[in-house]
Length: 301
Image (cartoon, rainbow, N blue to C red; front, side):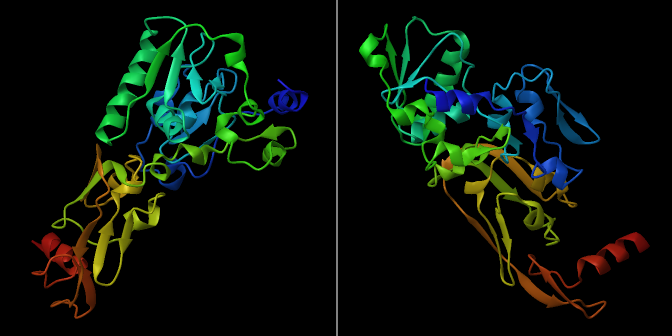
């Protein structure tokens, strides 16, 4: 490893939760993916927001991968990549399924192990990733067992600076005084699998009042409410469930589901309330009252 690479890795840094975290966006959020993903119990919820105990944190990167909205910043650990193949070593943390799927799109289609059979955690992650790849009509990872020869360990300069940063023009440009940040946006699966979606968003139009809370708070911009149409794009959804958490009418539900991209469209009607005579929007053709007047009549009863 070169002097430059060693210098970059020696820079002081700590993992941190960014304000883009959906628990920062709304106190109603129930997301705990970073907490669940941390095997060191270094992340806990305080005052409804996640906090990292850096004394316990081992910078394994599991929380970065687990966060559905890429709100955990830090240096993601390098993988051993040789000749566009992922090499399994004893010292490396087990990759998440999400990481493997992104590595696949970055050109890593083979995994090398010097021992057979695979360690159980590695085998489980690879099995799950291969299952998803088959569902989206891709060839699964190829497993190779054997000891690599010395010449096979030769790597290019680009590989030396890590596959994850290959899109960067210069590694120095990612360095800041005393801190270097991994680009957590790389963990957005929707960027790599644009023809598929990993979630299904369902809307109950009989409950929806078009309050637009989902549209305002969705980090992935899955909701667009216009004068004549309400459109939902599940392709960008990362299963953070914030829309379902904040919906006052519980009209939204999110389910982990893999399928081809399929946007949903609902008609929006503009009407005049029979009670207050004000204009309002609704998704139900039969509505004659606005939501406020309808609720007022319910309370009166």
